Length: 326
Image 1 (spheres, rainbow, N blue to C red):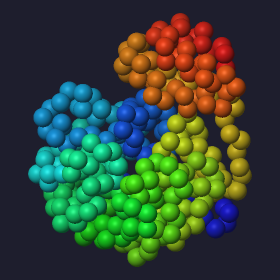
Image 2: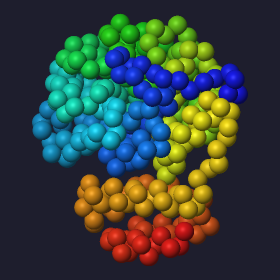
Image 3: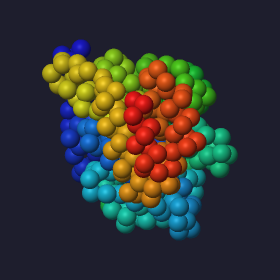
Image 4: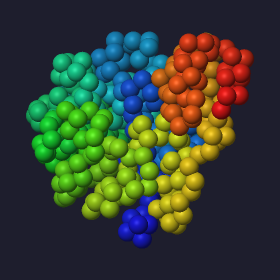
């Protein structure tokens, strides 16, 4: 397998990544503490949570906090969503002024609320509006602009090929394709045939997303002709060394062991420390309830530990007692 595919550097415009294995943007998940963990784990690029362009333009305080980045996570991309070309361009300027390295436009979010607003995956049905938005964003900033899309709305619907062509014509520097249709959400197997069709003939780098959790699922995508890299979402949560493990595997053929319980506990303690430093003690633990179950899912007493964390842990001393159960 390593003889057939290799992890390599990836250029996105003028930004050179150390490798082509990146952390996906995940709403409510990829905050600054988690992104820093992914960088420690070897991610070549990390993305902020999805940011509302309209909220940014309105100077919404909560959205502005989501845009905060740190030098330790560079290079970092910020993802924005919206359906109005002017608002998106104004939001892109705000994002650029925050100091991020890359701006990403979301054209793939399947959430109904986002679709009702005409944004996210809904835009896959309107190539003219997509072109207007992308041209407007690209012209408004001096950093590389990328997009994240789905293969289509329904199984066997190939919207990606045409959207990639539109993106290239608008000056987009890279496209990430989630290889599942919108209707499938995050469940089921990715469609490798549709992903291969999206890659064929693409004049800009296309990277794969969807269901990547180990060496095999990564290789399935990297073996596709013209696939420029992989983007890992849920497969990286509580498992940040996956980036280094995949890079080692595709570079040398050596399959490194999965994290032990002790290693998971160390990652968790580091995450708790980062979260407390960023949000404060109490809120730091509240925010971590969204991801804590990824750390304990393989433990025999996972349900008990998760319930304790969600209902009782609000101080560091509480957590130090809980971690003894690992």
